[in-house]
Length: 303
Image (cartoon, rainbow, N blue to C red; front, side, top):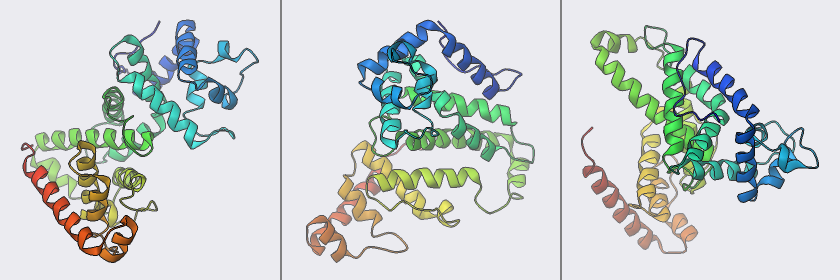
């Protein structure tokens, strides 16, 4: 059976190599049997069979990686967001394990996220002497694999694909920023020649942050403006989401902060009415939440 520890970096290009490996996985009878068993165990087999092409009456024997991928990517008329999220969460739960099936589950997640990985890679390729498309593509795929194996994504609120993309893009941007710093002042000067408008990567980060924030009621989902893609508002949402994930802030604490510190703030009276409390109590909640968030940032180790 073919198990991929880390996607290989080959002359044919990382994404070409992944597609070739995927064809081998789909042709592997042991892999198909393992995937079919997962779907039955997770009670997803019937739903996946309903949206997969080429599934016969004896559908259990025909379910495999290809059918699983069909349930993870849009295109089928019967596909729903709920099914996509359920299948992806089940895979991420398996990918967080420590056996060989965890590696296979993470590899399937990577294949499902290739369109997003390609967009991220294109957004980070710079025309003035940075890394090549394939170098960044390999970095992105490795980051995606590691994030899938981390055991953090499947427990988060919001859509798991958006959370996967956000964490992967954060990792890649941090790696590239460190690389540019090591290259010295000449490359930093070249950065200043770039278009000041937010690029695809910045917009992708803004979309992923806003989607995650909307899922827990911190903001409303919608198109991301050019200013918001690089604004302090986006940074605040990221900080609050991180604090909620670690337990520093509750969802109500997060809303008390983000509803107030925005270009179109929610009044304390309106926020209190939504939360079933008084304006004074809501103000005190926000004050305490800001204090906890500030304290948690001060306790972070220096980068």
